[in-house]
Image (cartoon, rainbow, N blue to C red; front, side, top):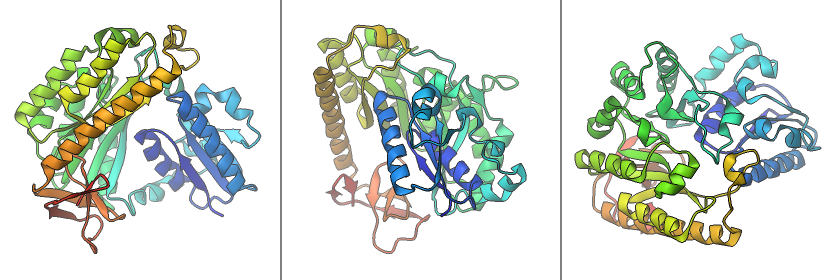
Length: 395
């Protein structure tokens, strides 16, 4: 059997897994688990994925890479199912897999086959020290890709038929700090739009609002090809908890950013990452999380129940009881679900341009998922006026 790649975690991992899969095309009896360590639950899921992969492919060579292979190196290496680890920093280097570098050129050209959306990693690693996070341990310091390298990769994907490009990074809005002249992310977005006038859609993955530069803000507010979809690495709506997290923004700054962008683009859909039950979180702080969901109209919410990561400052802080964390996470998810349903109702009767995917659904610019008419060709951009909501989908 050919090589299999199992991907867990973030969009960066998904993108990197596609590259690994292309690199290993033709390799026999090999399974790669591209792991995640962002939470204790993510590590648990990684271990489950390793066990499932071994059970499904008992005779294959099983290698593990990704953040868990760095943060939990000894524990992962000790698993009887695991044959070896590939360093996270080396997983896109063909030499780490005993693949000749020259073989990568034709392989990367096939990355977008069968996909309507291309995830383009433009930055990796993180230079910040949030008290709950182990990602800097897993991915190292922040490193930016050059504009030329990003443009070259996008060009290959466009040649393969991709209609939407999604820029990804561990700390996406820190892109450029290590490049000559220290350009900001807005400069990269402008370069992409200018170089590829035929690109219909450009989307950003999760961003740190405090790092959004003036040029990027202008493009988010006024450029139609930049999708009206802002996903914030918010983490909390309470200033004291933000301080204890060692985040660099305050609640009012997140609110001000969204307010300013919505004043220019009223179709902006907001997503956010929020942690439930961070150490020392009071009921008042939890209510501040609840209220910021309503104040920002968060419709794409990722709610993470806090779990302590060994070696992080937050793990040494007074912990919130597990049952309380579970309850608060459920309440936050319910609040997001209510905002999302009201938002979907508001879209009924509006004409939306939808990018068709192969599963019979597609995404509008605001990332609302839409059920497509039977026979809709994948990769096409079609206009749909939804009339109802079916299981969370516009139809």
